[in-house]
Amino acid sequence: MIRTVPKRPSRHDEEHAPPAAAKKPTTWSSWTPRALLAWSLLYSALQAYWTFVASPPRMSPVGVDLIAFSGWKAIVLCLAGVAITFALGRGGQRAAVQRVLVIASWAVSGILVVAAALFLLDVVGGLLPGIGVQFFPLGFLSRTACLVGAALMAMVAVTHTRRLRGACGACGRLGATPRMERTPAWASVAAYLATAGCAVRIVAQLVVGFDSGGLGVGVSLVLFEIGFVLSGTLLPWALVHDWGRIFPRWVPGLAGRRVPRWLVLGPAAGISIAMIVYFGMILANMVGILLSGANDLGFGKGLPDAFYWVSVPVYWLWGAALGFAALGYGRRTRPRCRQCGH
Image (tube, rainbow, N blue to C red; front, side, top):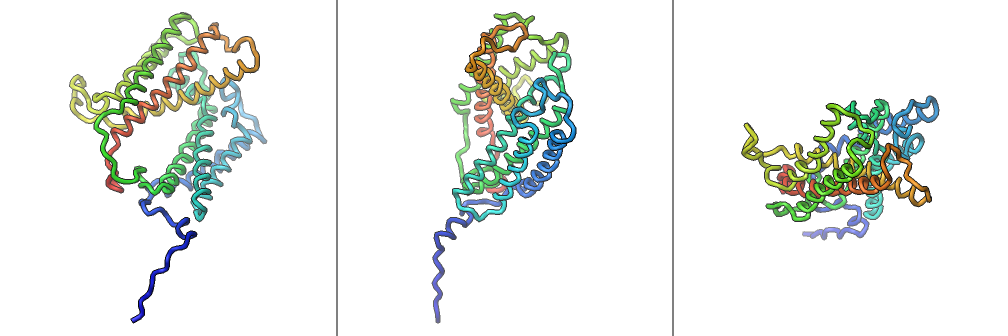
């Protein structure tokens, strides 16, 4: 009887073999590349039309729809996203090349988000038309489409990041992880930093007066102020206290029931990203003006430059702190994965 000896895998086979811990990919990972291709074709065609055929009307306070990446630059981003997605889907590269491609996919997604930084003004101006923030419908649609592309690109990046790490395609876990029984201390600190940022911003407004800044009056302003305060108090606190996971006794009809995870996490993540991107852009612009040697920022609205040098960094810190608190909430409330069981 002849005994066969199994062939020892070569170094090339080991490098190109899928990770042993890799799990079945998520459902959305199968259609995301096709959706990204369709989005890229449509959005790049729209940008090409606006760039080479017919210039669109004014689409934002600065004129263009996207910050720094409008027109032909947006077309390049679309094509880059498709090329990276195709290369990742094809596979066969060395691990180092795959890492570079994954980093590039995250970079394209991030650039698309930054390009649509004015989306925060769209939300405020669209929901609260009497507040004095002009709403640009066509620009809003373009920036919304840009963010859709950013989300699709991020989904591609998530899929291949998990695959490269050998993690579960659905939850990203590498294996069994202990359940988080209490809110991390860093998340609690972040939540109260967000509240501190909100308080400092209110104090800054008190110093210059509430009649400054060019905001409108009426119901829209009242709703804005309510949302402003809740975003700096109730929302970050809900991320780190038990009543943000279980409805407290003073909520009629819902007391003792579990709070839907995304009811808290969704607004926190969305507001955090919007504040980080928008006010990060404003802060970078302010620093650029300062380095250019200009005597003043030139923002107008009857407010001193000192007000902006306090308010804008505080807004950014508020958004970043809210994001860290949301990260802690997301980790603590993460459910058991139906795919890998962890």
